[in-house]
Length: 381
Image (cartoon, rainbow, N blue to C red; front, side, top):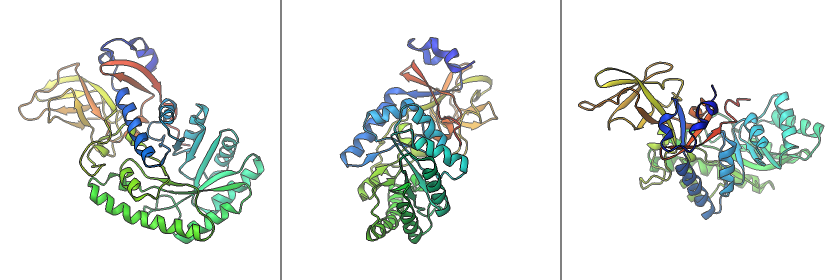
């Protein structure tokens, strides 16, 4: 049965969260809205445009809530995500990964002719030429292209300042394209736990980015947009003042990876945990340890085991116990939860955990208040 068939009758019933079939992806609505409002206020106070990354939530409803609080649009990691959000009325979209195959480029150009505002990142002259040919062939308005700059990770992005300049010029010289600016995202730096260590690294990355921007300006190609940043570096990037637009994503939910990071420099928590997985004890045959019904299929696993938020004694730990199961181990002298009891976990890594579920079960306290589809789930193309 689908989630709506299972749980729609529980919406609005006091205490209905406890009756949800598990494992279940849960969103605390009030915490979510406070996170959205906090980041919106942070950006607005500093004159920075906010374009949150939808790869985190993959949800039209959450994108709408972000835009209602002042976001200029959404970022998407994939073309399929952009098509999904556009179908839900999100009119300003930036695809942050290159779109390179001929069928995908055709879809991209058709999308450009359909939505109000579309941009795509590129890092290769051959790709830019292919985009130019397709945009001219299918007509419509010019396609906006941002030059993706590699800050040193070698994932995507032009490798040198010379490459950045050459690509920007190639875009600007194409009648069917428009040079929209530059993108620079420091991925793994987002998760450096120490604020000072993270800041030291980002200062170096930003100096490199600033040098490219100055060179583009000197060559008559000032970037209209400088887009990037993330949840882990947003405070540092705001201080350095180079980005005109933030692509922050995980702040809406938070997860275990960000939970251990000092995001503010003073140890305070800038955002709340709004995303959780509820699981239920299905076996309690051994003293001090129980088995819950959330295993490898319930959480992203590359960031380690999930943190226990509620439902078990302080100091309890979780370990993966197979596809469908996990073990909750009580601390020495502590009591394990009982059969049928619910244990609540934080996602180790929110983006890929969300991708495992069809819906969000939206709660206020212990009451289910709505069920939202995760429309862009699995949109890998």
